[in-house]
Figure (cartoon, rainbow, N blue to C red):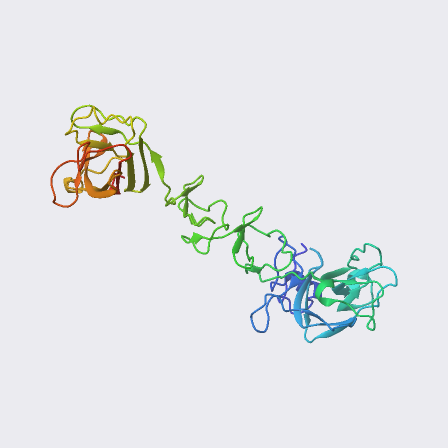
Amino acid sequence: MNLRSAWVAETGQTREDTRLTQLGATTPANPLEVRSGILPGSYDGLNRMAGFWLEGAAGAMSATVHEGRAVVAAGATQGAYPITLPEPATLTFTDGDATNPRIDLVVLRIYDSLYDNSGQTKAALEIVKGTPAATPTPPLIPGIGLALYQVKVAAGISAGKGGITWSTDVTDLRTPVVAVGGILPAYGETGTGAYPGQFRDSGGALQRWDGSAWVSYPSALGGIAPAGAVATASYTGQYRDTSAGVLQRWNGTSWINYLPSPTWTDYTPVWGAETGTTPAIGNGTLAGSYVRLGTVVHVRIYLKIGSTTNLAAQDVNANWTFRLPVLPVATPTWKLDGRVLNAEYFDSSTGLLYQGSGLLAVSGALGFVRSVRDTLANNDVIWDKSAPVTWGTSDVLSIHGTYECAP
C-alpha cells in the first residue's frame, strides 16, 4: 500500500511525502491534486493580489518582481511545491528582435532532479523567451512551472530605444489559491469549481459552484438578492430585486412580481339609472381606468355628453349609477356605509365647476357609485340630466377616488 504520511515517522519522511500530504493554502483541483497559484493579500488590504507584483522601470528592459508566496502543482504523484519570494527580485528582458515582436513569459519554475534529471533542486523566477514572429505566440512553460506574466517585447526596442511599455504590453496571468474551504478571491482565471459548495468572491458578489457553473449566492438566507444576481432561486419564497425596481418572489417554478408596479387598466363603466330609461352615451364619451394593489383600488370614471346622448329620453329623477371595476368590500357594514368617491361636474356652457361626491354601493356581486350630489350641504338634489344644472353637449362628469375591495 503506497499510503503517504507526514510528520508521523521518526525518520524517513521525504520531501515528496511532505508535498503530497500538505494541507496548507491549496485550492483543490481533484481529490489528489491542487491548483497552482498565488496566495492573495496585500500590505494595506486594498488589493486582492500583491504577491509577485511586477513593476517595470520606465524606458527600460528591467522589472522588479515583488515578494510573495505561491504553490506550484506538479501532478498527483509528485505533489505541490510551496514557494516564497522573501524580497524583491530584478528581471531583465532581452532586447527586441530587429524585425518582429515576441512574447516572453515570467514564470516560477521548479527544478527537481529526482524527476527531471536537471541536476538541480530549486525554485527559480525566470523569463522564458518567446520566438519573434509577425504574430507572436507565448512560449510553452518548460517542465513544472507557473506563469505569472506575459510580456510583449516589440521589435527593435532596448533600454536605449524606449524600453518595454509596461502599462500596455504586460498581461497579468496570476491566479489565487486559498486554504481548503476558503473563499477564493476571483482574480484572473479561476476556472471551474472543485466541488459543489465551493465559494468564490467575484468582486462584488459571492458565488457558489453548483456542480456545473458559478451561481451568484444571496447575501444572506432570507435576504433580497440584488438585481442580476440570481436567475434561478435556491428555495421557494426567495426574493430578488430587478433592474426595473420590482420586487419578485420565487414560487417554486418562476419569479412572480410580489408587489406589482402600479399600472392603470382601462375599462368601460356601465352607466345606469335607478329610475326610467337606461342612459345611452351615443357619440359622447364614457371611459374609466383603475389600479388595484392588493385590497386597494384607485378608480377614475369619465363621462362627456355628446350630441346624440339620450338625455331627453331620461327621467328627471333618474339617479345615475356607474359600475365599479372591482367589487367593494361590504362587511362589516361600516366599511361601505357612507363611503364616497369624489365627483366634479363641468358645465361647458358657463365654464363653471361643481364639486360633489357619490356613494359606494353593492348590489348582488356588483359594485356601483350612486346618488352623486353636491359635496357641501347646499341641497340634497341628486345629479342627473337636470342637476346641478341642466346638462348639455360637452358637459363632463368626473368621478374618482380610492376604496377597499376584498382580497
